Length: 372
Image (spheres, rainbow, N blue to C red):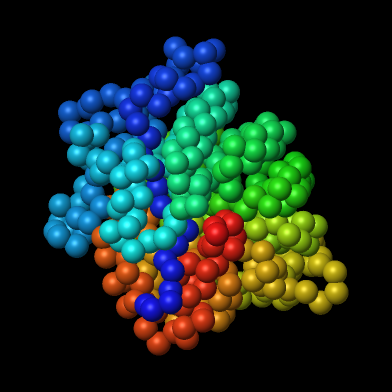
């Protein structure tokens, strides 16, 4: 690993128990998300809806000790301090040989399950404010990702602009929005704003927007082995909608990433995009690119993938594009590579050319998220 710099393109914070009671807008104070101590776990609620459990911050490293003890139940007092405290977070990064980290939430990933759109927006705004403060002591090492509610696209654009001014470096949008699919022109102002502000957008696992038809049921995929095994289904739909509707042709500098889904699905998906566009009847009635361009070319130019330890995916890296792949530790979640990130990256990069490995291990993330 000589000469490599590890930058985690997918790390996490753990929101403190008083985040929303302290920071949410006054008009939503009496409806703020709150923590309940259930019989076996600490559980977040809002408007009577369960939307987040605490296990995410409690089990980093357990998979290396005894994976049979991995569970979806957890208590706040058992969580790693690095999830709450930026100073401890950076100390853990040092112990794990990581130079920089791109930070996503834990609880706020699940906040898209809150039915009321106004409450959701207030919840995400309060989180974004807290995250900016979390990153502030270490501006050269911590980069925060804004959480956006896209129910109202103009509101999402405003929040993106506000958070960019606070120093956050990208934004997450739900894999499955509650309203129109991402091939609808209603989202064009968001694509334009993200492009113009150089704010890459992310589709992170677990971000399903509540809707009247599906309610919270899509979240069951996180706790079901069959659903978990096939979890990239929904993100393929989102990326397919963006690519096949010509978003990347109309907004050529926009970057959209798929986060925490590994890599191996992508070469097949890219082939399916091209096959559908070129040879299937539906392709004759959908958006047509200029010239002889194919969907896979836009994937390689505009998309990026954040992964943890997909050996097979790394073997197929040239099909996806070397500059599109970014390693992430997922600290402090149960599946995290912490505290063995260096060892794991060395293993999955075995046989990879040094220049390519340096880009995947940290160089690509450094460029996209503007690390020094």
